[in-house]
Image 1 (cartoon, rainbow, N blue to C red):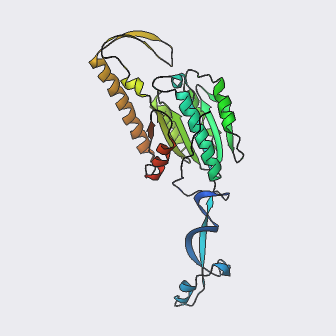
Image 2: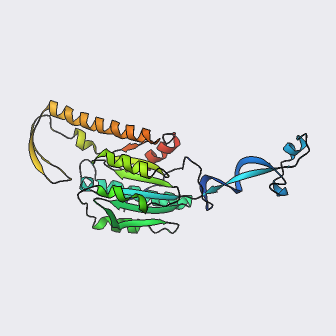
Image 3: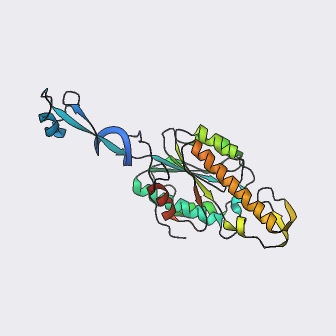
Length: 285
């Protein structure tokens, strides 16, 4: 079992939950984040009297400081389990996803958030459906078991049925995929899930774009359909492959920008620091 560090994450908008946690919320209470001043009549709590504001009031009114409490949120990992994710090029996508889930499990536990998991291919997978809960159900041992006999299936239509399985309460949704499907499906998912904050993580293996011989005949196999074909590889063909990937990535960025979010492109081994940096550098804003 690989050891994975936790990563930092945050919700951009104020949480609406009254559950205590680590995220700024819109709920006023016994928190540490100053919100506003209100009269003692409206909030009869003399422990929070603001002496300076009260003494400076020309109408001699007593003022009380109100605070916003920090709250816990639901965090959901949505995992694409279609056949293309079984690809093993420079790295193993299964190992990447497993390491991510272990890191997310540790991170949500430390933040006091509820963690849930959804997997989809042509449907929402029953064996990968774990509702968000405060209990640490998604332990590292369970994650290992999920991958022991994991079967990747053809198709992506399950993305259309994801929304009813998401929590009603606004939360953070990590969406992991290689995005080898119609991007209109992703656009529709973002539209239907607009009450949540979506973090798209695009898994890219450099072997798909750069792992080709300079010249020669190669037998290509479509990891989704299983269809095979012979192709003559030359520089023109390689340039077309690179252009196709660049166009696809630009389209993902365009769709995400329309919904006010930032995608995170990741390749190689899973890196918790990369995800932390995505949040800390303001890529999510």
